[in-house]
Length: 244
Image 1 (cartoon, rainbow, N blue to C red):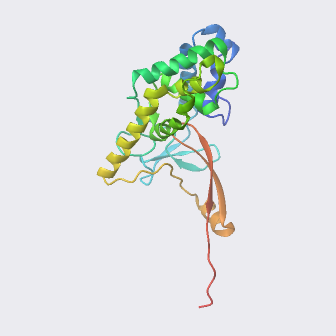
Image 2 (image 1 turned 90 degrees about the vertical axis):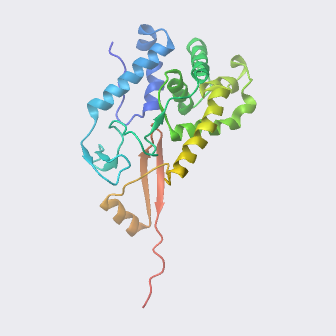
Image 3 (image 1 turned 180 degrees about the horizontal axis):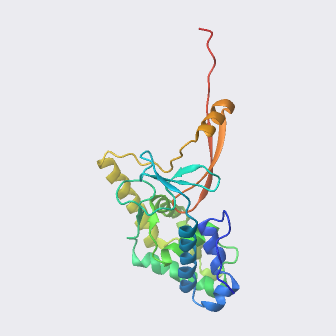
């Protein structure tokens, strides 16, 4: 039986979560870390095979834009990351080994007992990223830092609830504290370099600009650096027309 392949329009975190739980993966790769590595490889290979046209665009953070399946052009998504700059496609993997071990411990429990009712797709994907030592974006680091709000549940035993399991899935105390410190470091460096960090960039097509101008509202779907899909609402206030 062939290995799982990403479905059309399926996002990375959804694919990894689905892939590691399929019967063929459990049969061929008994250990969770093996399954994660294989599923990540499956995703990467699919990205390479299905990458659309690429062209230079000096207005994109890394100088490239890609043709999406819907025919629109969007700033970089599938090309290799360009070194330097403070944009969302810069990634970091200097989180502590203990954060990786915490995520591995959570996944080992899941491998033996399942997720049950614990965790959303984002949290499960975060555990896979950290356990596999993958580079993570500034946006992901910010999400890890904000997970500190759940620390009051961190000591809940895995067998008694979701608190401790999901805390470790997000890197545990060492991972969250690293994320808080790292986020400050990244943003402070951007300030010193007189750079303005922005979380997302969207390039309007001529048709979209016309729709926004004519209707006063535009809904656009975009995918950030870690694969999270979001819908952005743009509004335009024409103001009252003058008689003068």
